[in-house]
Length: 598
Ligand code: ADP
Ligand code: MG
Image (cartoon, rainbow, N blue to C red; front, top):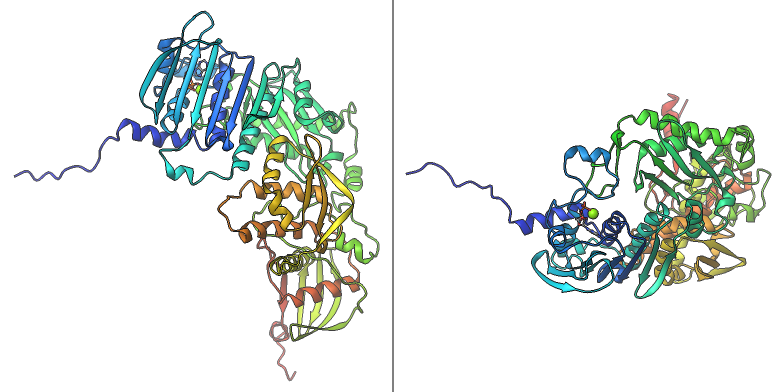
C-alpha cells in the first residue's frame, strides 16, 4: 500500500489563469481604453477614435488608421506573451513603443466579448476575428479601410466579482475621458476623438506643437497662468508647464508626469517639484504642472508593473536635483517670472491666506476663506458652521437642549487655538475643526429635517472644468441639488454655481466644487443617499469653516465655543481630527498637587 498522499497542487487551466492574470492589466474600462490606445499609437496611427457606451461597460470600440496586422499576426496577437515589440529582454532598455508585454489583448479578450478587425495597408483582405471570454476564436475575411478596430462588449461578463468593483457610469466614463486626454497630451500630431453614446465628448484634431495641444485640452487661458519649462541639456530633456504661484489652487489638477511619452506616477519627480515651489506656495495650495521628461531608455526600468504606470530610474537623485533646479530656475531666472519668496509669502498668504486680520464683522467669519481646505488630504467627512455669533456679550450663559453653559472666552493662541472656560472646565479648542464640526452637524440636521435652505449667489460663480471632471459632476447634479448646490452647465467646459446652502454664508465655491469632485469619483450608485451626502456636507463644512491663522475677536470666540458646546462638545471633526483638549478642575488640582481644601 502506498503511503503517498495525493498532492494538492494543480496547474490551473489556461483560461482561468488568463482571467486571473487579466486582473492586473484590466482593472476597469479605462484600463482597456489605455491599452488599446497604446496599441494604436505603437501602430503609427494618425487618427484614433474611441467610442464608448455605458461608461465602457457595454461597449468600448477603438478604431485606428495605423499599420494593421496580417492574418498570421492577427491570430497571434490574442495569444499570451505574443508581441511584435521586443524579442530579447535587453530590448526592454531600448524600446520606442508603449507596449512590450504582449498581454493586453489576451487579457482583455479573456474577460469580454472581443472582436478584432484589422487590415494592413498593402493588403486587400483583412481579418475579422472574435471570441467570447478569449476561447474558440472565429476567423473571417474582412474588407475595409486600412487599420485596426478592436471592439469590447460586456466587459467582465464572465467575472461578476470584478463587475462589482466598477463605479457609476459617470465615474467610469470620467476615467476614460481622462485616459484619452493623457494620451492626447503627448501626441499632438495625432487626431483623437472620444464619443459616449454617439455623442462627441472630446475632439482634438492634429496640431503641430505640444503647446497647441495643451491649449486644445486646457483652454486658451492656460498659458496666461502657466510658466514654460524647457531644458534641452543635461541628463534628461524637459518640456512642459508649471503653474505660476499666483495661480496655484487647492486642487491637484493637472499634475501630469510623462516619461518617454508614458503617463506615470512618480514620487521622485513630484517631490522635486513641491520642493522647488516650497515657500512660493500659499498654504494649502498645490502646484499644477504638466511635465514631459525624455531620457535615455537605458537608465529607465519601465517593466515595474503590468499597467506600466510606474517607472524606476537608475539614478533618481540626478533626476530629483535636475527637476528641482529646473523649477527653481524658472522662479529666479528673471525671464518669465520674477518673485521674491518673502514677497510671495506676504502677497499670496503662505502664512495667512486671504483673510482679514482686522476685527471682523459677522459675515466675514461665516464666509471665511474658502481658499484652503485644511482637511483636504484626508478622506472622510468635514464640516463647518454659519457663525451667528457676534452680537453676543463676551461672557454669557446659554441654554441649549435643556443644558446651561457658562462660556468665558479667554483668548486665542497662534491665531489657531481658542482658550475658553466652559462651566467648570478649561478648554483649548482648534478653531477650524470646532467650527467645521458645528457647521457639519447643522448641515446634517437641516438635511435630515428636509429643511436645508438654499441661498442664491448674488453673482453666480463660474467654474472651468476639464471634460472628465464635467462628466463626473453632471452625473451627480441631482444629488448635489438636494444639498442646496444648484449648478448649471454654461458653455462647453464651464459650469456656474447659482446657489449654496444658506448655512454656508458666502463660501467661495470654486475650491469647494473641486474638492467635491474628488469625493464624487469614489461614489458608487449603490451607496445610500446618506452615505453619499455625508462627505459632501463635510467638504462644505471644511471649506466654509474659519481657517487657522485667522484672528478672532472675543465675541467671535465666545459664539464659536457656545455653538460647539451646544452640539455636545464633539471631540473630533468629521475627518477624525481632534477638536479640543479639556482639563477639568479636578485634573488641574491633581496636576498642581492641590487638594480641594488647600
Ligand atoms: P503589446 O502591445 O505589449 O505587444 P498587445 O497584447 O497589446 O501586446 O498586442 C499584441 C500585438 O498585437 C502587438 O505587439 C502588435 O503587434 C499587435 N497589435 C495590437 N493592436 C494593434 C493595432 N491597433 N494595430 C496594429 N497592431 C496591433
Ligand atoms: Mg499593447
